[in-house]
Image (tube, rainbow, N blue to C red; front, side, top):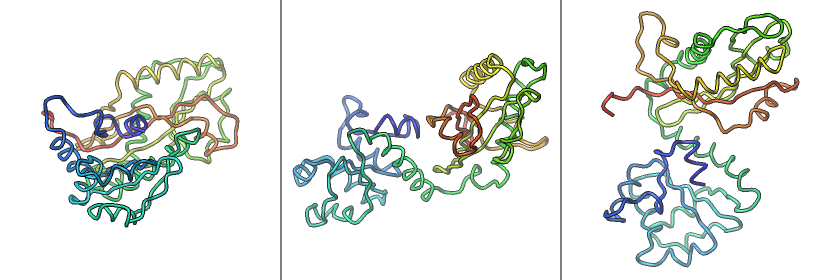
Length: 291
């Protein structure tokens, strides 16, 4: 679960009490500070959970108490077939979590499916807690970011022709465009925004890049170049998504998505699958250079 959360939200954004404690520090104090600086505490509740929670030195109870005292959302996650404890079964200091909606995560073959369902729930919690920022308050930012990414890739991509002799074009598209492309006459790379998520003070744009060329080799070369370019230079320069004469207080960063391009494709169109890559663009407030 830690790996799933870290891949989705970043390893520096997820704290796991049994793995992140430095040596030679107070275990209790370190955990308290970590929880006090958190937005959500995920409490994993397994079949033996109640046998330990009443003990005076139980760290799980202490962690939940700290979260409740600091008005931090506690999300109970039931492991396997573990039932949600009743309030009467819990210490009074944490009994309120018995009345919160819990989610279930299996330890068997359903684990990945359950994690795919859990992540959006956490995203919605973070979105509800988020404060306005320059990234979330600008109504034009999403449109500028989408076209900025395309301009960025177009500007840096080496000019090449496919088997049809056409120069590859780059284009932002909607769902109604997918039945119109003819790769034998118009080699193209399309950008399709399929999901928007607000997390904390930033916005995430989930998109799919699809390759429409007359031959497989051209598609492979383009896909390889995109992967290489975004690995080496994942931050889009301001000049590509900021109008002339304006400045921005936001960064536009790109990273690979863990979403299956085939599943995204099926949500968009019933047409034959094209070679595609899934990415996430993060629009976030610029940080001071010394941070």
